Image (tube, rainbow, N blue to C red):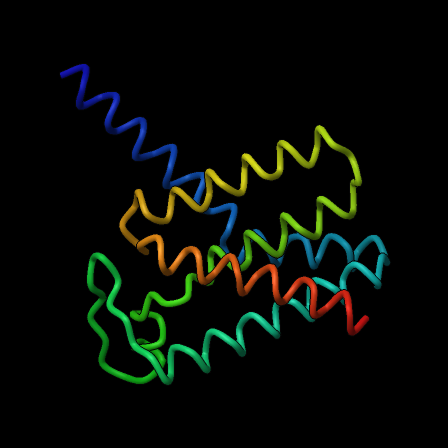
Length: 153
């Protein structure tokens, strides 16, 4: 009984922490910077969003890889979502971590953000949405997108 309770708590924790890499969480930051009229930060986040999504759509259109727990799909859009490589959650998480590490430029905040990002990345494998190859590729994509956006803008 206590082990089931602990397992449920652990499952809930990783389900909740994984939401920090979600589209909605990313969108909240874009809206936040737009409301604050911090257009340069908004442009960085929006540009990163576009680059990451285009890259994932192209990669998943060419290369399909089932998720650890397979998704059923009936059309091309669902097939894109059913593919696990690369992890878009991991890409968004890496991009946001890079963005906020530079934004705050503080060693303690940076350490916290790295630990938080690593926890989100682990949650993707724990929840069996991705394997480590998917997550690693997502991190590379997120970091590449971050550097590309900063180079362009």
